[in-house]
Image 1 (cartoon, protein in one colour):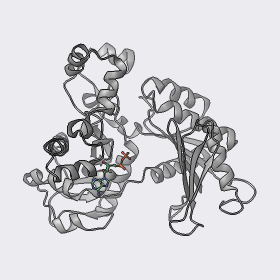
Image 2 (tube, protein in one colour):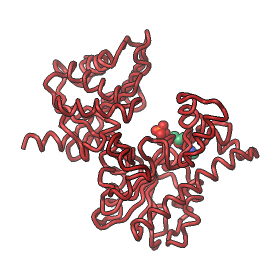
Image 3 (cartoon, rainbow, N blue to C red):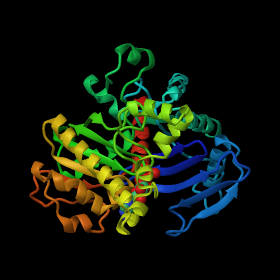
Length: 405
Ligand code: ADP
């Protein structure tokens, strides 16, 4: 089954085309950037092109529909395309950031589903509108092809009320749906499933903590295959110290700063989401590699940034082990989780008391997917490259098959 996976941001569209059968082959992938400008950038590569070769060109894409049209035309191009006379895609899978409390799994897109995605725009004003624009664009360009929404929040809908409710007056939850939702769900689900495969155990018997550490970072307690708690919340701001986001903080600081620094809502929002985290503490960059380099050159603030990021990751892993009453495995993924061996080592070092025995050689090896603890370590730690698009493709396939009976 051929599945086109679409991930629309406000000015970008990423896509991957998979053949989802036994081998889950990636057939093509690409990106349209700077949608809405006079000139947009388009990058494309397919399995028929030589390794490392890609097509890069300027295109006109005044909106998401025009961007999807660029993708469709390329897939039909006699030289670089994959189809001859018509696009033979069986289903389009869309990444949708927020599904509110309505979606605990992926959904075949209908008028009703689109209405709910629209209603959730309030909860994710930067993400859901472009996600919806991508759905409408694909309906227009690929009429008659079923479309499936795969929500970042859905995996976390299994969290119990005691984990998702905030200590606010309950009426505010009822009135505005203010609660913990959590994000990166597709990634946490993918790596937890893959970890169970690697460990050769049933996921329904495993207690895991999955750490998605990138520019945005979150940690999830996955008990018997279900998310029971996660570090992001109502928005993707809380939890870990991230590239530019504060993570957990006393909310009273917001009131204090708005008064002292005369900040309006937008300025406060920018401060919390764009000027904080690694960037704010170090004063160097949101990019961990640059912060690490600066720390090596003796920048004390860069050290503080790294140490506070690491400390909080360790603390979350420990608290989730307590929440589950035990822990079998810790999984690292995302740009930092997959590549920064030194950070993994620092995170795991204080967890030796729980039975995490790091194997430094494995941790430093070049393997992309690997166990990094010793063979007899009571708690295993694994590195697993995430693949959200593949997970979306598999889910989209499952939903259309289910709908077909
Ligand atoms: P996003 O959340 O935007 O998808 P990524 O998952 O690509 O981000 O992660 C980006 C982060 O990963 C950056 O902070 C980058 O510095 C970090 N990173 C990537 N490679 C390495 C590495 N080899 N060592 C340390 N950090 C790395």
